[in-house]
Amino acid sequence: MTEKITPMCSRFLYLALFAANLSFAQIGGGRFFAQATATTDALYLAGGADLKDGQRVFLRDAYRLQNGAWSRLPDLPVPVQAGFGATRDNAPILLSGSDGTLAQFEAEVAADHPGFSTLIWKFDGSRWLPAGRLPYAPVTATLIEWQGALVIPGGEDRPAPPVSL
Image (cartoon, rainbow, N blue to C red; front, side, top):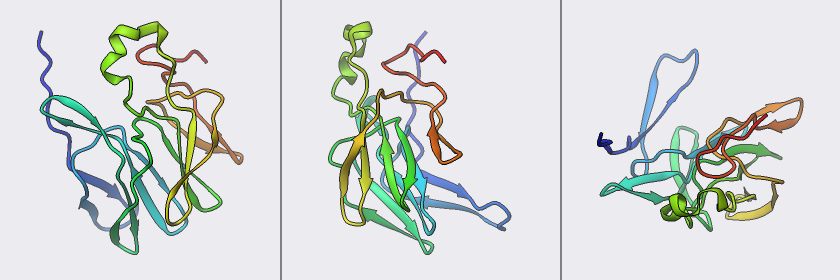
């Protein structure tokens, strides 16, 4: 069986609950596994991946939606895909994610894969800065805030095998 690879959606969709309209915005190219978060007055979208000629391209671009308008932010220092977006001190942070350096070798390294990036990135209003490290780095999962803590209930700590709870 041959898997059909289709282009990624090139529009970011957001729905304001209780508002009359669903909003669509064209930003950047297509993307999947992007990170998103919000502060008190803005929504942020960063990184992810796109498909070009059937190959995954890891993204570093970042955007802010504020007062109804999108603006391009400085690129991330490295690509980040399938990590998490959160907010601390009313600033967006990105946790974990794949930078793509081992993506083309995932089948070969399999169980010997060193895992994904543990680096935390924080946007200070003008640039993305390292802001710490996670003890381990799952991807492709959900992050929630609960009682002041960030909770990641599982995910992959390397390509394919899920993390046990």
